[in-house]
Image (cartoon, rainbow, N blue to C red; front, side, top):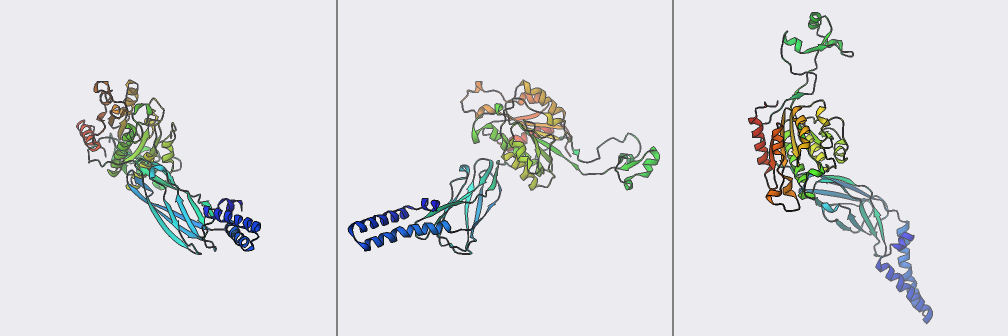
Length: 442
């Protein structure tokens, strides 16, 4: 009841004040008719408040976003389905959706005459120019009586996640180099002696099924040998994103780090479409790959957190590209000053490594040398980060990009300044990698 009285509108309070005034004046002037009119004016908002307080409105809300995952700058549509599941009709509904500021203004709707079994669909559009993960909702509902005397505020507590991925630049087909590694039991090895049968068998291990025993090889070698489990070969690639805060310049969407995220997203999607099994690695040592499930985003969002093993996607096209983009949608900068390269000692190393780097110094040389040693082909985008600095620097004051340091340690690298075409730089990078003759990745 206290909530209902506090929900009196301006009109309701005016009715109450006018009624009390009329009752007092009627008593003082001995005008019974005026007193009865005043009592009616007082009773109307009070009775309405009592009915509103005792009423149990049962409103249901279903919220759908299409698509749930969208690229920065692209719109998405939110569909709302409101239903009255109670038997008490309501007056006017004032609906206000809670939407993060980055997605636009808060949509507001007015719905009249809601009866039993009523159902209505509403919709609005959202769009964000920045990447990230946002929660749509909750929705605030204001229920007004037919006379407009009382308004009660309610809220749906449910929210729906909405992810905005980085922009993806289409990259041209480019010859890459690197070693293909298999995910199974078979490994390439030379035929130093014996027949091809010897290559496809291995020693018996406890738990192997007897039907896999290769009896001719077992008789010849004097011990049980079993056939290997052949699995398809797959080309692997690691996309390394340098997210150290100290090596980037600029703020917000216009920073060098955001440009690095765009490059990483473009390269990752391009490699997935080319048939590579791709994983993402950051400067904190955290690794994630498409197909790793819900832990992808959390592994990137945790500053300084790391995962002991890298996940690789299952090469299923768009689904895996979406998982990679979702991971990049929430990646943030970290306060590390040195690159954590513990991931290069993990199983499944090799293949192609594409690094997107900020400013580099001589202390990074050791890590760059180790990465180059453990990978089949090392390609890098070296951002000229001073170009994103908020302070205008003369050309002679700008630090050179990390291309010379990378080339010195065996990398194939190109620099990237503000305004440069990512597709053009990618083509140049692939041309340099092919010219090096490191061998084609399978």
